Length: 108
Length: 108
Image 1 (cartoon, each protein chain N blue to C red):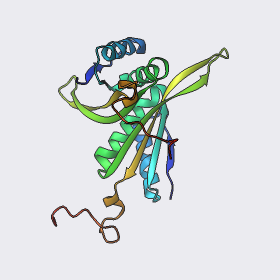
Image 2 (cartoon, helix red, strand yellow):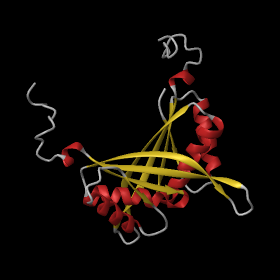
Image 3 (spheres, rainbow over the protein chains, first blue to last red):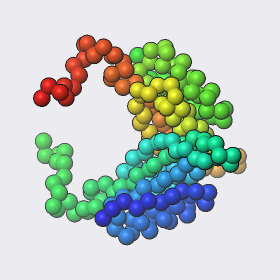
Image 4 (tube, each protein chain N blue to C red):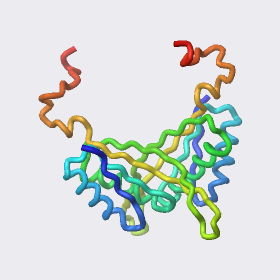
């Protein structure tokens, strides 16, 4: 099992939510959303819609970066990037909690 | 010392870079950039410009969320938010390494 990458562009957020759900249904552990420039809010939208409406039990790690892109006149320009890693939480991957011991908050 | 908050809107990224630098020069430990919707890439730009050009020794934590906003017809709509926390790394806050023990990689 490995992470699947979804590249976020200019489509509506729900297109990417669908891609994320499809990816999770193929039993991947995590899905990585990658976006740059003006597509960044769409990636955040897709992650938030997935987390709030469809898969409440996922964790969300975000990192930002910079990429150099070739401009029209051969000049390079910097563009900001975002990488959002969605992962099923341990409880979700193992619903019965049989093989993994749970934290015993009430026992103490 | 506490964190200063910079709200990112529709100005060019350099305006917010200036606000971040001013904040760090007032001896704050950290600066929090908050943005929502289409201002999110500007916040990422400002953080990246600060980190790449002005303050190489800062760490960057990003979290995403959703806010409910009142629409024009009284309907609420969801908008994505981003919070980027910039912090000076321990080495930068304490350049001489006198009062805080450093990790002794070479001693072992």
